[in-house]
Image (cartoon, rainbow, N blue to C red; front, side, top):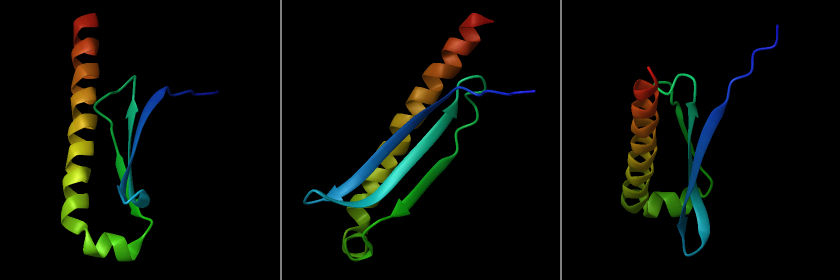
Length: 81
Protein backbone atom coordinates (compact mmCIF):
# COMPACT_ATOMS: atom_id res chain seq x y z
CA UNK A 1 0.00 0.00 0.00
CA UNK A 2 1.30 3.42 -0.97
CA UNK A 3 1.66 5.85 1.92
CA UNK A 4 2.08 9.51 0.97
CA UNK A 5 3.07 12.16 3.51
CA UNK A 6 2.62 15.86 2.78
CA UNK A 7 5.46 17.93 4.24
CA UNK A 8 6.57 21.53 4.30
CA UNK A 9 10.30 22.18 4.16
CA UNK A 10 12.01 25.34 5.39
CA UNK A 11 15.53 25.94 4.10
CA UNK A 12 17.87 28.75 5.06
CA UNK A 13 21.42 29.57 4.08
CA UNK A 14 23.78 31.63 6.21
CA UNK A 15 26.10 33.65 3.98
CA UNK A 16 29.15 35.84 4.51
CA UNK A 17 29.69 38.36 1.69
CA UNK A 18 27.28 36.37 -0.53
CA UNK A 19 29.26 33.14 0.06
CA UNK A 20 27.16 30.25 1.46
CA UNK A 21 28.61 29.07 4.77
CA UNK A 22 25.98 26.91 6.49
CA UNK A 23 22.64 25.49 5.35
CA UNK A 24 19.70 24.81 7.69
CA UNK A 25 16.50 22.90 7.03
CA UNK A 26 13.40 21.86 8.92
CA UNK A 27 10.72 19.53 7.58
CA UNK A 28 7.21 19.63 9.04
CA UNK A 29 4.81 16.74 8.56
CA UNK A 30 1.47 18.47 7.87
CA UNK A 31 -0.53 15.54 9.25
CA UNK A 32 1.56 15.43 12.43
CA UNK A 33 3.01 18.95 12.91
CA UNK A 34 4.63 17.91 16.18
CA UNK A 35 7.16 16.12 13.99
CA UNK A 36 9.79 18.59 12.76
CA UNK A 37 13.36 17.33 12.39
CA UNK A 38 16.14 19.89 11.86
CA UNK A 39 19.23 19.37 9.72
CA UNK A 40 22.25 21.58 9.11
CA UNK A 41 25.61 21.34 7.44
CA UNK A 42 28.64 23.55 6.89
CA UNK A 43 29.59 24.28 3.28
CA UNK A 44 32.58 26.56 3.94
CA UNK A 45 34.61 25.49 6.96
CA UNK A 46 37.04 28.44 7.05
CA UNK A 47 34.27 31.09 6.93
CA UNK A 48 32.23 29.12 9.45
CA UNK A 49 35.15 28.91 11.86
CA UNK A 50 35.75 32.66 11.81
CA UNK A 51 32.02 33.59 11.93
CA UNK A 52 30.51 31.01 14.30
CA UNK A 53 28.85 33.56 16.58
CA UNK A 54 27.03 35.34 13.73
CA UNK A 55 26.05 32.04 12.11
CA UNK A 56 24.84 30.70 15.46
CA UNK A 57 22.59 33.75 15.78
CA UNK A 58 21.23 33.18 12.27
CA UNK A 59 20.63 29.51 13.05
CA UNK A 60 18.62 30.52 16.14
CA UNK A 61 16.59 32.96 14.03
CA UNK A 62 15.91 30.19 11.50
CA UNK A 63 14.77 27.80 14.24
CA UNK A 64 12.54 30.50 15.79
CA UNK A 65 10.79 31.02 12.43
CA UNK A 66 10.34 27.28 11.93
CA UNK A 67 8.94 26.86 15.46
CA UNK A 68 6.55 29.80 14.93
CA UNK A 69 5.21 28.18 11.76
CA UNK A 70 4.95 24.83 13.55
CA UNK A 71 2.92 26.52 16.32
CA UNK A 72 0.63 28.03 13.69
CA UNK A 73 0.02 24.59 12.15
CA UNK A 74 -0.66 23.09 15.59
CA UNK A 75 -3.21 25.85 16.34
CA UNK A 76 -4.94 25.27 12.99
CA UNK A 77 -5.04 21.53 13.60
CA UNK A 78 -6.52 22.04 17.11
CA UNK A 79 -9.17 24.39 15.71
CA UNK A 80 -10.28 21.70 13.23
CA UNK A 81 -11.00 19.21 16.02
